[in-house]
Image (cartoon, rainbow, N blue to C red; front, side):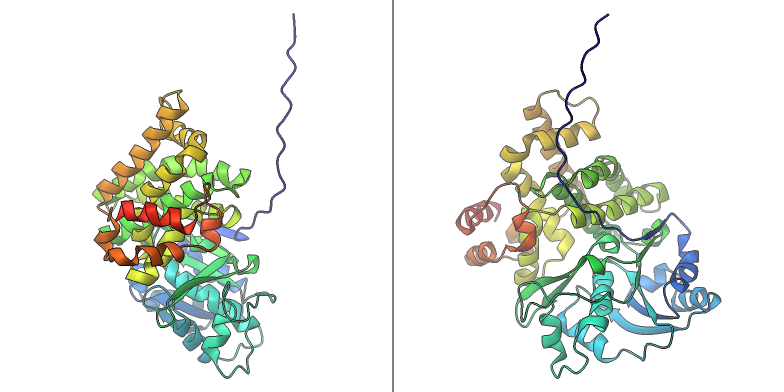
Length: 406
């Protein structure tokens, strides 16, 4: 009997992997907010979204959970949308004394709320407390802005409690901050900024309306796909995506049709958490690169912008990542074609059908972009996300792509 020699293993490049040190996942886990927070600080500073508290039972419920764990709650900021430089500066100006045991920052809300909390927690320990211009001090810590200062000192510990299933901000190392007056949207970024704990309770997402569910869900799907195919992709995030993406693609139509389906909501919350870990440890691509600039130009909510750009980005990148797209299709459908060409095309068609079902915008004109601003959009769609795109795109090439998508 002959024995075949096993194939030589392919080389695995070195990689880092960062994630929250504690993840509590499942319906009802909100009840453990006090316990997990008390491990990290002696008092609680809370950042909440305007509509998020109702999903947690209201302010009194949150305060009771913390009080039972021996924590006094101080509400330091309320997020009213994607955080701005002014929002961060205002929160920093109003921070109370830290106390002997130090505070833990608790973020309760969607990705914008969590990003605001992460930025405040980072700058509470890294910003110059004597800075005369607090807004400029915020700008100085954003990528490619101001003095280009980095986050060197460990931020205050953050407990992230997402109330939407989309951004995965509870597991990312950055906070996206915009400045409408100066017309930019940039990240504050450091591995130190990953929340110390993510408390993911899918029950908190049940009351999200259809629009929020669709936009956040497609943001999650975009992050899963772009992190899988990006040029900085790493093996551990890809393995997580292969598990989470099929669940998300099956569950998003379900939650759009049946909002109270807690099993489907849980699948989306899990996928969002994974998408945050995946993008943090790999990267993103064109859809996110354009989405940031589109938010600056048109005020387009991030999830909607990603949903609009995802099918466009997949077709642009297909020549460079056909096999990866085919692999994703086979993960979703075990009966997919053995032909990489056919499977990749089926996956792109699957995503386009999902976007149609969600009812998200499909053309740039639909979100209010003027045709004469396409050039500006192409010139300003750079940054870390675009650097991860599988296909190199010059501003002129991107301009032609965006013109076809207008």
